[in-house]
Structures are given as C-alpha cells and as structure tokens.
Length: 259
Image 1: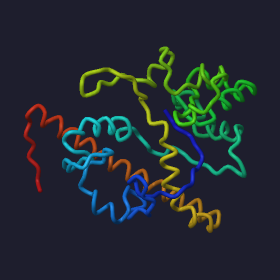
Image 2: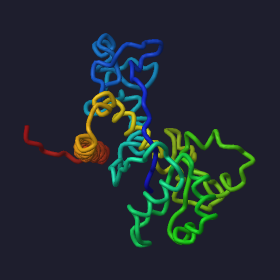
Image 3: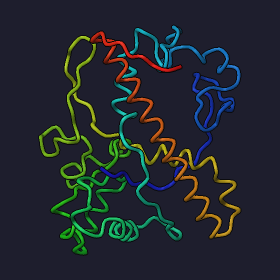
C-alpha cells in the first residue's frame, strides 16, 4: 500500500490532558519540560503511572498494548517513495499525473493507493478513461480518518473506497487480532495516517521553508526526507530487536550481548 496526502500544518504541544505547553523535544517528544521530568520513566498508557519496561514505552501490565501498537504502527514502512510540488492546488488531475510518473507501468503499481479524496479520484479516473490503466493492479481507498466524514449515500465511496471492508472484497486491508483474553477482533492492517504523521513533522520546518528560494526549498526537502528515512530504518531495526528479545525471553533463550 502507498499512502498519499498533502501537507498538514499545526503546532504540537504536551500530551498530558489540559496542558498546552510547548514540547521539550518538538521532533520526537510528547511532553513539555515539566511533564517530561514527571512522566519520562512512566508508562505511556493513559491513566497508568507504573514504571516503563526497558526499551519499551509501557509498564509490565501494558506490554500487550505496546506490542499491538508496534504491530499497527511501528513495523509498517513509513518510507517516502516520492514527493512533488503542486502549483496553487491539489487537483485530481495533478494527483493522477503524479501517480502515473511514480508508477508508470503495471508491474510497479501498488495494490492500494490510500488518499483522503480517493472516491473523487476514482470517479475522475473512470470518467477520463485513466481507470482502465489502473483497474487491473490498484484499488483507491480513503484513509480511515477522512472516511468517517464521507457521505453514507455515496455508493461508489462505500463500495470501492472503504479502507476496512468486512465483506471479503479486500482481505489484505483487515486482519484478525486477539486481545489479552483471547477474544478475536478486527483491525486495520495498515496505518493509513502515515502521510498525516509525516506532514505534521515536516510542518515544524514551515517557517524556514517558506523563506527559501525554489532550488533551496527542493534541496532542503530532499535532505529532510532522507534524514526521515534513515531515522525510520533505524527505529525499525531497534523495534525488531526488542520484539525478538521478548520472544526469546518467552521461550527461555538466553542471549549474550557485548556491552
């Protein structure tokens, strides 16, 4: 799946309820200076004040929640495949042209393209004939956040652009997971908010980017995205190592490490 979206701007502040102070670490942190001191070593689950387990963000009681979070968000690739500047607006025609440049042939096209206006994109592609080039390989779906605000009466959106259909039409979008009591439940297989999250991070550089020349802007964006990709790859390796260590502990395997 590839996820597509435009930039989203907005300030980030402390995750503690009713606290609107600036983050002490605006790029990776979640707390203001005061709450960073008070909660740095505490479980990140809302309402829990127990100490963290090493290399995780949850206490012993909430490790299942932490691992579910990693499965849903941490292990999914948030790597940037391509980016482009759209003059004045993010029109459907510009989006289709962008997708055609990034995925020019059927053998490289993804199974799903996730974007907030997927239903409008699908209708436009069907009208101008572009859909004939995509229908054998790709399905356009709306991201989960925006889908709940799309009209229930929009048959095409509900039939073809549902990000989590339960009728078996897109089994790769929905998986079954079991809670701590072994009770099965459905959940989305992909993080369709990936671009929203990336754009929120890029938004922190908006003031600087807005004052640049076109060539400097392009170079800086390439650099930011390169650094982002390196950071994501590093985090993925670290998370995989933590999960592997947890699995080994469960089956009683001792691992020697060089400190």
